[in-house]
Structure formats: C-alpha cells, structure tokens
Image 1 (cartoon, rainbow, N blue to C red):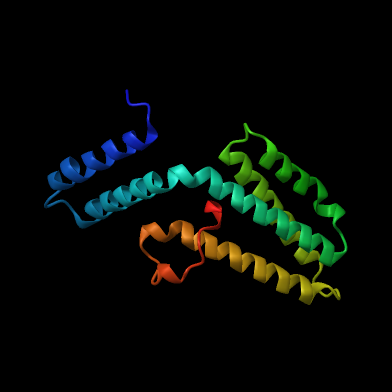
Image 2: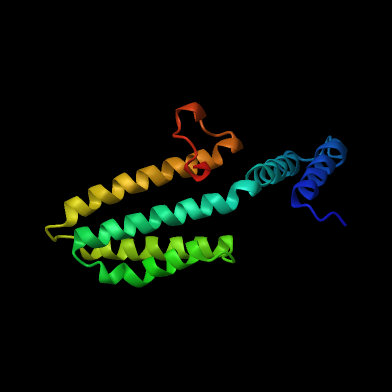
Length: 166
C-alpha cells in the first residue's frame, strides 16, 4: 500500500489516463466526459492538497476579520464574539483539522449574514453592506485563485496573488 497521498493520486491519474481512457474509445460521450471530469478533479486535488491547510486557515482569518468589522459597524460585536473566539481557537490549535477551519468559517459567514439581515433598514445598513461587499470580493478573488488550476479562469494572471502562501 502506498502511504503518500501525492503518489496515490499520481498513480490513480496515470491509470485513468493511460489504461481506462483508451479502453473507452467508442464509449458513449457522457461516459468519456465523466471520466475526463474525474481526471481533472483528481489532478486539481493533487495540485492543491499540499496547500489546503494554509488555504483554509487564510479563509478563516479573513472570515474572522469580516465578522469583527461587521460587529463593530452594526454596534453588536457581542453577537459574533463566541464564533470569533472559536475561529481563533481553531487557528491556534496545532491539532485542528481542515474541517475545523471550514466549520468555523461557515459559522462566521452564517452569523454575519444573519447580522446583515437584521440591519436592513437601520442607519448602519449601507456601511455594513459596503464593508461586506469589499471583504467578500477579496475572498471571492482568493477562491478564484484557488480554483485557477481547473482552467475556467479567462485571465488567471489578473487574479491577486495567493494569500494563503503569505
């Protein structure tokens, strides 16, 4: 058994490309398309796996910053304090898993969304929406950078540098 994820993925990719794909010549179009999608997905995972922990930590840091700013703008930082603390604990826990970072980020995004909804019609609404759009835009740019190896980005060179590598 191969213990290295990188080598396991490389062997799987080679088997799919060199053995399975040629055996499907003449197969129905959707079967070949599904194989190509599977090959692309495994290739993407292989390329990004070494950077995944840093990516999810970067995402969590950005979500914490967004939640802190949203709480201040809305004048309700206490609504987000526990979730922010949970996120910070995950960042400082050397045994935290990627799923812990993802869960904390999702929780923060959900709470910020609820706070934004609660601010509709209040004086802070416009300022909060502007701040959330700015911070979300920066995160979306990082998500696009993360997914750039998939090949759908028209101009990957125009994306900001990968913040998870800082």
